[in-house]
Image 1 (cartoon, rainbow, N blue to C red):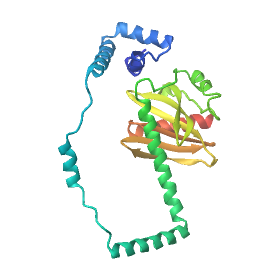
Image 2 (cartoon, rainbow, N blue to C red; image 1 turned 120 degrees about the vertical axis):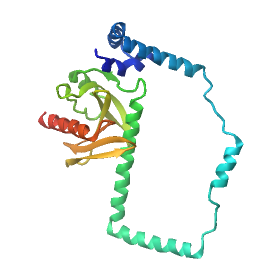
Image 3 (cartoon, rainbow, N blue to C red; image 1 turned 90 degrees about the horizontal axis):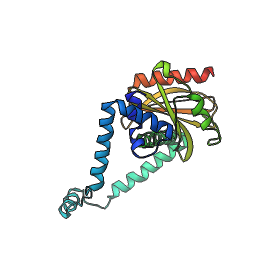
Image 4 (cartoon, rainbow, N blue to C red; image 1 turned 135 degrees about the vertical axis):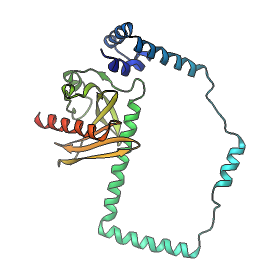
Length: 250
């Protein structure tokens, strides 16, 4: 086990969330690695300090008064503003007739889902949430999804290309359970979310940035993919291309 692999599992070890096999592997590594042993002790000291500290803070009443004083005063809308509102309503009605409002709503829905994907990625980075099944073997991770989802997501081994498989888990995006396959690129975690789609058409890959995280989004063969990471956009695009190539050839 390398230091990078052990570092990802230290929080889970501290919280007693690893299976016996991974506990032995991490403890064996810590026994011979001063750096990782020191990191684990630092985590323990931090948890102890947080447990004994009073982290509750009550803002003084003067702060509320200052905030209320800084807020704009409420005012009654003028007749001109009311008429302008009616006019804007008429314009929106005309736009709706052309179907443009549907496009706007669809875009807003996509942005909402991207935000949910980033939230799921952030949850996974918390201690003990990264994977339900921890394994670098694709033949262990893929069968784990069977029976837990309507469609088991494809799991590809990209270790030789520089993206190490860590494991998989169930997550929730847009109100439904989806698969999440976890990879590591140096110290960067990549969550690959996979969901079944009702649209069988393929969708060209697109890179977007949401809340400081890069997301590569594409669809193929009835599945939609979101690869999320703080990895730079070029490397994440390379990761997505390798996944597409591997899943297309399978």
